[in-house]
Amino acid sequence: METITKHVMKGAGWMIEAAAPSETFIPEDFNEEQKMMFDMCHQFIHTEVWPLLDRIDKLEPGLMPTLMEKTGELGLMGVSIPEQFEGLGKEFTSAIIVAEALGAGHSFSVAFSAHTGIGTLPILYFGTEAQKAKYIPGLSTGKLKGSYGLTEPNSGSDALGAKTTAKLSEDGKHYILNGQKCWITNGGFADIYTVFAKIDGTQFTAFIVERGMEGFTQGQEERKMGIKGSSTVQLYFQDCKVPVENVLGEIGKGHVIAFNILNLGRLKLCASTMGGAKMALADALKYSKTREQFKKPIYEFGAMQHKLAEVAIRTWVVEAALYRASMWIEEKEKELLAAGKPFNEALLGAAEEYAIECAILKVSGSELLDFAVDEAVQIHGGNGFSDEYNVSRAYRDSRINRIFEGTNEINRLLIVDMVLKRAMKGRLDFMGPAMAVQKELMSIPEFGSTDDTPFAEELKAIAQMKKAIFMVAGAAAQKLMMQLESEQEIIMHIADMAIDVFHAESGLLRALKLVAQKGEANCSNELDMARTYLYDTADRVHKHGKDAINAFASGDEQRMMLLGLKRFTKVAPFNSKDARRRIAARLS
Image (tube, rainbow, N blue to C red):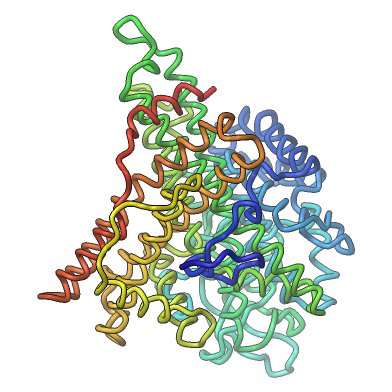
């Protein structure tokens, strides 16, 4: 039996504990300042970015830096940067809100996200006081533009396989960098770069490199399938002289910077892609109401309503999961600050605590946007394939997000890897619930629910699907042991089970919190979305679980687990067609 928790959950704690809706942060909880900030960002996108999209995509010289400077003047680049560095010093959730609201800006959103994330945060969180004083005020206000050099031609997902080297000069005043970096966002106009190299070929270390340093040059702008207006170049280092005081963090600890910054980047990418998905939905809805076929708007056809409703449902659920996790990070940061941690260690520690959720949300957000733009093109029909309609740009621009911030395949592998490593270290009680589920498989199955409290059926479905995760993951880990890491297909099935259940629970908690506030009669749309997603999740969890089980189990063990999986993913019949029609009818 799950226990109701009244404390901030540990990372991945939602797998074990049931959360109370009243303690779950939802978008409807934004305060007035956050709502105003969201509206201001939206207004900026509408008035300053969208009218210039064609010019942006042509990489008009000076245009992108000028737009970024305008956001700096509005304080948007320094939302969560401390006031001592000319930032606004706002809470973490406000930074996520800004990332979402600016997420519909196509290439501009990429440039902004890269600057405020990987372009600024390494120095803010790992720099010395002198480094922060020198660079952060300019990065916070947009007077300086930031970039990040990690990827190389032969090291993408394997970041530690980088070949760029650094060697201390004979006079001990400089590190001499040699090598190259590729796919560098903002690389064509940035002033400041965080670059990773191996000192003496072994010690992976970060350096702050300034434009104009001797031996530092850049290549031509890359021609890309999408995000054409985002500056992307290669960086070249030929005996590049970097002052020793520009070493960032500890020598040999560059991986700490790279991996910790990725956690925050993944969460913000989810926010940005969700903003883009909302734009795609709005475009598709508007088009469907004006495009007539067979003497009526295509919006009135059931097939179109299904598409629109499904995009709306997935967006709403990802939004619920995103802000649920964002508040966990914010609360954990406050807890660490209260314990005496400096601000940089507090946020990084909070982000590390929820690294699993950050990976989950990176996957779901990027795949949500891909789904949304694909359906938007389909709703536009032939016009969606024309550059006269913005949806074609949205379609091309979306694709990169499944590669950014670690590919979705890498993130899926990380989700399960981090859970199992935390279990081994005692940070997460995973094997206890897994063993309990194994015992439950031997018991007589329950039929129906005797609990007649409101929404008991839905809450039980979530709890049962969590058992399915424990059953499959626990058995796979126990049987395959060290071989599990080479069975990537099984790991990815387990990851997808976790991703779906986390989002289904987040959507249900959001709906139930609103029901408690406004009454069930006033939350029919939210309940339709939560129930439809939950209903479909059961089938997806069953399919992923079945494919995983069939890959490592056989005989009686296989039969028992498949029967258990069927029990754990059983949900009551639900008319999702009518629910989607109701959802589509409420879209405006």
